[in-house]
Length: 497
Image (cartoon, rainbow, N blue to C red; front, side):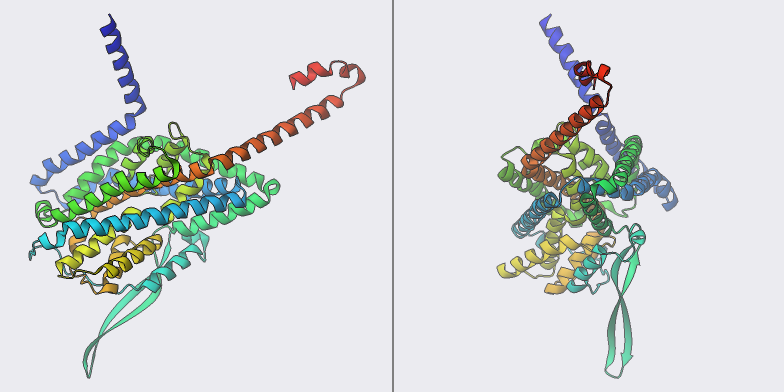
């Protein structure tokens, strides 16, 4: 009888867990289905049109996520900043950027140490069939920082919702009396990608102005709360298409790789190195930073936001997984303060890329090892500092990490003709980087929540006392307005109010 009761209890707990994590289970099933589709369809040699239709559900899912990014960012950032005092915004920003710098620099150090230890470039086999010869782009460090500043202050906030500014390079080869010469010219151009940094900065400015004029801007704050509620309702229904989108995206990505086995043979050691670096950063470095600040177990935070991490790995977008991440951070068991989540996570999306910094260092050292270039300790330290700060201002162009890799390689004289090897497995590296970055974003929010918890609790207590005092004053005004006969029943009326 006791054994049967124990079994029934276990079955009930399993069913309860399965219902609570149904979306996660369906998403994992979608991952398996995606790989099975690749194994079934690859021998049949599907045409590009067939691959396009296989990837169509995933493409539509990504388009739906992009549709919600702007209203979600605007409503969450404005409501978060407008609900706080200016001093509180400064404290949270300082805590967030302190976490950014610490985690990114430690991720870079891990990338340098592991890549130097394993030396995957020495084991890589040169093969004429491997994609190489990628065009060298003349990115300059000053232009990367200039693009960052331009995008922080957009000239047109409407255009910033769908376009970003970047420096475009045009290369021309001219024949002269002394032979051919290469002339590189640069100009400002627009890329069709949302300028998230500009939108967030504009929303922060609006929220700060609203926090100063609370009485006059209350209708706008109420409107932004309504927008936020509506977007989360829409997203809550839309996210149930994620399992189908997962299978579609994985199948289409792998079917587009021409020779998967050749890529695995040539880049297996480098992939293993990157995986080890990201695993150490995710499982050891970030939890260690969190533990030093909070004295708490970081893996409870990972468990609370596992849906958002898996979603970001599938869609390869931290911004696209932002609604799930915010909901996971605000809901039990995490239960981080809503204002912290709404303020810190959008900042992380804009500026934080510690996993990207680790990958960049691994890539630069790997390319150098393939070319027979081994750097001294001072050079490695300089590279680490450069990578740490450049990852805070990655330019808004596709494969942005590749831009930083080319920039750093050009700065230290590492040949970039093998950059095409990295592009062959960018689909896998991008997924791993995004997942680790998103987990780090959650840990940053958890750390800032711990730092701000006492201050926010005091503020909420003061706000509650103010509301109670106002309510008590309104009761007295209402009761004192009654006639003499009604005032005899004043205690009873006060209780009713």
